[in-house]
Amino acid sequence: MQEVSLDGPGPTTAERLVTRLGPLTLRNPVLPASGCFGPELASVMPVDRLGAAVTKTVFSDVRSGNPAHRITETRNGMLNSVGIPSIGATRWRAETLPALLDCGVPLVISLGGLAEADYRRVAEDLAGVPAAAFELNVSCPNLEAGGVELGADPAAVTRTVAGVREVTDLPLLVKLTPNVASVVELAQAAVRGGADAVVVANTFVGMAIDLHRRRPVIGNGVGGWSGPAAKPLILRMVWQVAEAVDVPIVGCGGITSAHDVAEYLVAGASAVQVGTATFTRPQIMTEIIADLPRVLDELGVSRVTELIGTLQSDARPSPERTTP
Image: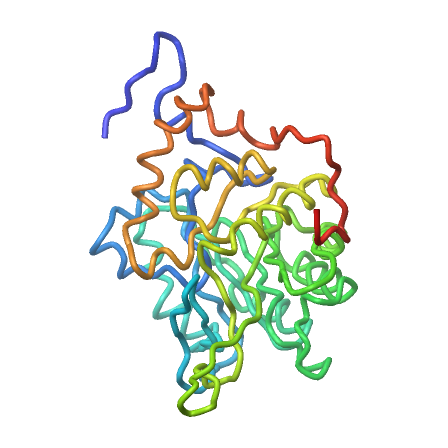
């Protein structure tokens, strides 16, 4: 599509949407959330228009995932407990990576592990891959700590990120869990370890019950809850984190429109990830990207970067604040 200048010497449509995540430049701020994107989406939308592609989480070893039932809709969102199945880094590199690279956008590879050292190992397994960045999914259960999320322990987050930083020069994004008392402490811990950006946030732990069977709907009992109703909760976290760290933030939670993207930018994010909405509208990300220039015009700004961190409020964010 040919770009045209707006009002004389102003930025082109493409230039209006450019943003940065540390050393990584993105053509626009819209990315898929990990687990919600695959090269098969190229059949229903122009994936080359995304700011970047984020892969499903890759583990060094093979994983089968959680028992069925793995996904269920709720009144205000979706519960999933897929368990992040993985064919292992070696097969993933040979069988999955080529199709992802054909999408024509920067590739952010999500890394997972069940112990701190696993993240370093999978980063080493993928050394030399033409990726734009790694995203560390530290919300996985830590088998070294009895199954508690590794990402719930700030010291473990710092060590994990530092371990990966030692073996790669790629930009590191760290995806944080919201299931903690203070997401700010986790963000600060990730930065201490060498994170170039943080993703706020992964899913909330939730449950759905089958009343007739008196059993959880999800085979694993509980799952990660996401959807539009999560947006106010994650917006507050983005605002808190933006006041506490000096690295870019990727907002993730409940995004269904270009206005949602703008809210996240104003709260302090430099980019966003879209997840749950893609299950019902696979083309939603490119629809949002196409609508962003109109929203910028509506808000009286020339570029998306002019919105970042512009929230006007007399209140000051506190890591402990959970009520007004």
